[in-house]
Length: 65
Ligand SMILES: [Zn+2]
Image (cartoon, rainbow, N blue to C red; front, side):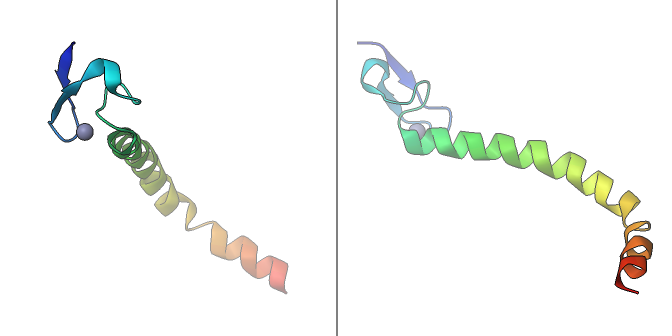
């Protein structure tokens, strides 16, 4: 049986019995997926928002009046 180490929780587990390779469990797979999404979204979004912030208040005021 191939035993590998989970990259998330560092626990050694049987690779053939895992439902979420290369992680030891589906929970660790979700944690890894969450990390990727956090990094992918936070960087570009935080950079774009300050640049657009100056234009938004003007257009919103025009629509209300
Ligand atoms: Zn794990």
